[in-house]
Amino acid sequence: MSVELSNVILAFLLTLFAGLSTGIGGALALLTKKTSSRFLSISLGFSAGVMLYVSFTDILVEANESLKATLGPTTGAWAAAGAFFLGILFIAVIDKVIPETENPHEVHTVEEMDGKNEEHKSTWIPANA
Image 1 (cartoon, rainbow, N blue to C red):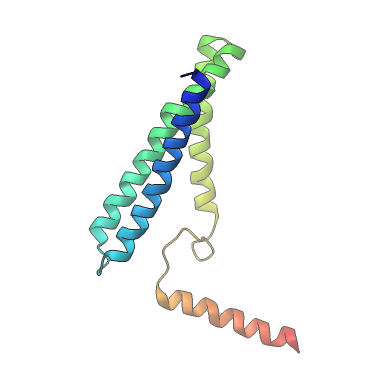
Image 2: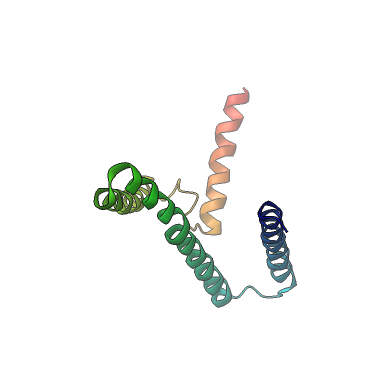
């Protein structure tokens, strides 16, 4: 078997695994009768861990190699690590700057969400007049 064919088969199997995982996750969500905060917390923690693993092992390594080739071994390694942590800092600053009431990633109560709908209704009616 050629290298190109084995790469295509590997890519297909990984894509199939990802698609099946999505379906299995959706089925688990539909089959559970009660929402468990503990299960949700564990699932979200696992997902976050997977994303961090991908960031550190794939993206950061590739950036590190590229920057080392461009800037030299020491400067390139420092530039890759610095850019990674500056990105984290940038996201933290953005999260602090956006008000909690407008941030779609903040958890809102049902009452807060109902209040938003009432605000939109009141501004929509005069706009039509």
